Image 1 (tube, rainbow over the protein chains, first blue to last red):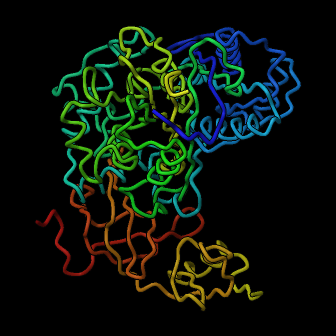
Image 2 (image 1 turned 120 degrees about the vertical axis):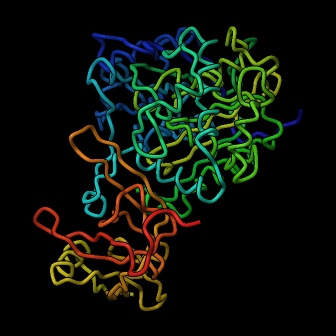
Length: 381
Length: 133
């Protein structure tokens, strides 16, 4: 396959730490452990990191905190916050800075102890004057409203949402790191407590601890080793509050995906494995449509056909996703780690054989920020 | 363009509500109403803004029921598409949350909220409660 690459960046190390419950660690401890594990895998020393990227749950200056914690003096520090997609925006800046020669080694990290440390979801979402009187439960309510509209326009059903939840669980059972390695039945699903109709507690992502980190370098530095090459990356945003979303059934992933695929010189048909930010079950359906893996409105039937599960023709969220593997508040970076593992053949029992092209897709806010990365294996180099 | 009529969008909006008026902004040059209030028209940056009174008519665009633990009662939250075009978050009063449906016609109503006011909706006159096919 011939690919015209915009960016010469490659991921040469990726790691997770503390997935599930990691009592006693602070969020920064977790991020640091993941960072050191990723550096170790990359064979790169901490002192070589000159581009530092992070976004912590409640530390709005976490770039500074992280540099201090690690004891390094990065040339470029960035803690851009776009919600859970932030870490893919960090990849974009890192790739550009690497290409420009501004930095040589980028470390992108995230850690959160929201399960054992704070006992609940940490959300940066603050209601404003025009939302507060109505007490929408956030973030779930935003996604519930989008799901209601998707159902209204396209006949999407809770059976379709169940197919997403089931697929995530099936994948999680193949992943020793996943937090929720337990099968789910249709009966479980339809008996689950409703949270914000049409979404039940089983349509919502987990609340876990966990950390992730990736190391990016220019591809000319990669020698005789497996890596994940950044072939294309697109960002898009079109609203923040859910009531301001231009069309509740189509997210800006339509635009981020188009840009990413165009840069990579591929189409969705070339993709072997897809890692999507599934904060809620409806996300998987919407993003598969918006990214062009199926037509708008057909996502429900697409997921129900079984193609996204183990053994299916388009494996989606092979680690179990935010629904069944890990969700410490912002899941975005975990999509990249799993894509890296699939492309480097290190995904164990859940390995998608011959995976050469992966999509990692981040979502932030209330379907507000969308960032799509196309990554390729050594075969695409 | 230097005219800025709406210097303090939130404060002016709330002051209108206190007078019993639900107001939207629009740019004189584009003539397209928008919500929520801002210092400039979204998309164009036009600052030739004026306040216009909303008709109060709207339609449910999306709906959810927020489930809460007893003894509190579940409640509905909706996105309303106003007849003038903009959408806003709100709730429908005077009807069970389960009887609110997408496409339901609504009429705006101003109610006290904390020490201010907020816009909610009631079913429009003649609108049936419950789902219609």
